[in-house]
Amino acid sequence: MEPTTFILFGATGDLAKRKIYPALYNLFVDGKLPQAFSLIGLGRREWSDESFQANVEQSLRQFSRREAKDAGSLKDFLRVFRYSVLDIGRKDDYLKLLKLTESREDELRIPQNRLFYLSVGPEYFETIAANIQDSGLGSTNGWKRLVIEKPFGHDLQSARDLNRKLSKAFAEEEIFRIDHYLGKPMVQRLESLQQANPVIQALWTNRYIANVQITANESVGVEERAGYYDHVGAVRDMFQNHMLQLMMMAAIHLPHDSTSEEVRFKKKKVMESLEVLQKEDVIASVIRGQYQEGTIQGKPVVGYASEPGIAPDSMNDTFIAAKLQIDNSYWRGVPFYIRTGKRMKDKSTRIVVEFKDPLKQVSTNNDDHIAPNLLVIDIGPNEGITLQLNAKDPGHKGGFKPSHIDLHASEQNSPEAYENLIYDALTGNSTFFAHWDEVELSWQWVQPILDAFEENLVPLHSYAAGTYGPAESDALLANDGFHWWFDS
Ligand code: BG6
Image (tube, rainbow, N blue to C red; front, side, top):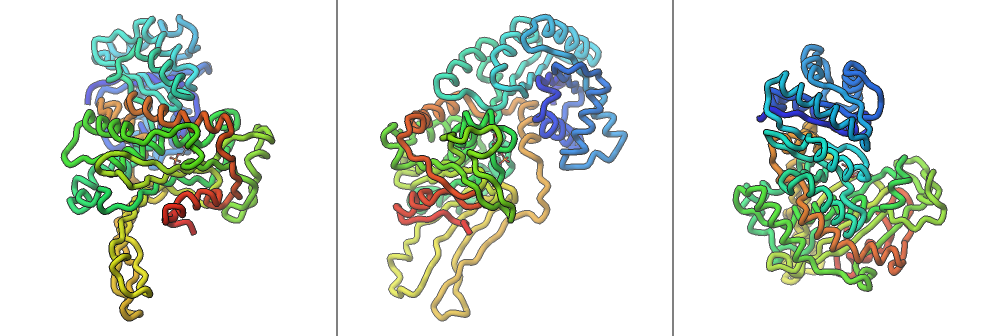
């Protein structure tokens, strides 16, 4: 792997602590960091290199999936961490950073391969990118990359503005937009699930599939993020990015070992084939909801409007369910149902593929209940795949019962999304990052929903915390003769 200087904006922040340092540490333990690697953390706090390293160490103790037990290797890991105070708007601080970066590169005798990681609020993206450019940090004799976190814009227009500004300093190939759902191991395995299983590949069309259900339920509420969440809602926080990415990944067909360009090209094609919603039609295929008080795992919780920092008359969506239609030869006629919500009964992210049931029509015995075949891809918290087939039920003459082929690993300690994504960014593999085309098309598709919500063209339904969302979400599927699987 090529020598790299990892320049981290927001080094004292929460995301760095919870995700980035633990990910880097686990990559280090697995021998997946470059041999010549150095990290420069940036923040407003007046930290020394030592206090920075102590803070990183503390974060590993709290958040790493693997214990940082071996003092020797921990020391080796932390040795390359340096800290520099930086005020995002101060040009001088970037010149100081340039000096430090160059002196580290000289010390290690490495080329100027610089990975700029922006673990800061989106309001700073533009200023940082411009200052990287103006200070000369971006003029390297090696490569440069920009890794940014969501949200990428607040709507179609702001996303376009942001992209235009970033592209003054970085080319599209240099921008790595993180959508951490694309880093989840099961999402990354979707591709190989088809490639390694001709049976699945052959069935992946409207000839055999009745519908696809994509769920990301969370039992947490708004937590301490009222200021952010009340402005974005489930539609911007989860749907426009994570959920549409899952949909694209489930809908693409990748028969061969595909390049990053091919994967992203196919995803773009899926987005382009989505049937466009007009603002007035949103009501027919999108359900929005907001949680009321209820009980989660035996504990009473307050309703959204009573959460600290939320206005009592807030009309924000904490739940969204939608029916999407992909108008291409593979998927025409197969509804994709997508839902995500806060304060749901449990935390689970999964894709359920329900197969058509031709037996339904041919069975002469009405007592024979034959459940549809299902392929269930559990993305989290447990990872695995289940195939539901039907087998003769020995206890019931002539009857069938569903039986399962279960491919869940017994040990669930696979790399976290951030490990996969940081590794890919270090190696320059952009397959599992959101390309601008996907981001733009996603905002474009979602924009009528944002407008319809804004203009209250869609009712805001209530649901009790600890349930699976408003009844209207069930009706969305029932209208087509389906139901959400595994709500119990
Ligand atoms: C984030 C959202 O992107 O994803 C959060 O901002 C949400 O609101 C989180 O809780 C869910 O991620 P995961 O990996 O826990 O499913």
